[in-house]
Every structure is written in structure tokens, then in C-alpha cells.
Image (cartoon, rainbow, N blue to C red; front, side, top):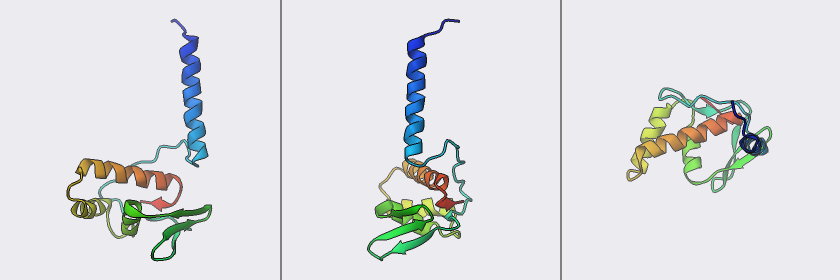
Length: 122
């Protein structure tokens, strides 16, 4: 077996950089399962809506996230009643010219990130 020190150092540096970036954003190195069509996303315990009608935000024990645009539209639908599949269907109706697979992937990724930060459960 041949060892390539340059590759090993580069691989370690890339992994370290990715880990540092994830830690800087408060992301743990834990893979969270994506929501399924039957998942019912909702705000996690200790999280609640705050701000004004014009500047909605999610308040959570470690801080707050100001929401606008699509992110706000997604989280407003995460009421524990609607399923992930229903949320996707509603947004597809609203953005009828958008690529349905891209919307599904983007929203799934968004919810996974919020679950990792303990802001959303599903």
C-alpha cells in the first residue's frame, strides 16, 4: 500500500476545515434523518414565535432567528398538524413554476438543519 502524505494532509485539512465550519455554525456532526411525507414538523420544545407581524422570528433558548420569505412560509406551516407532504404540496401550488424535486430537497435540507439546531422536530 502506497501512502501519499500530500493527500493525507490535504484530506485531514479539508475534514478539519469542514468540522470547524460546522462547529462555527453550531451544527453537530450528527446526521439527522430527513423528514418523511408523513412527518409532522413543529417547533421544538422551548421554541416559539416572536417579533412583530412584519418581522417574525423564532425565539429559542440560545437566541433568535429572524425569518422572511420562503423560510418564514415553510415554518409557518410547521404546526404539528400538517405533514411534510402537505407542506410540500401547498408550496408547490404557490410556486407553480418551480422544480418540484428542488423544492422538496431544499425544504427537507432546511428542516434537517433546524432539527439539528433543536429548533424543529418532526
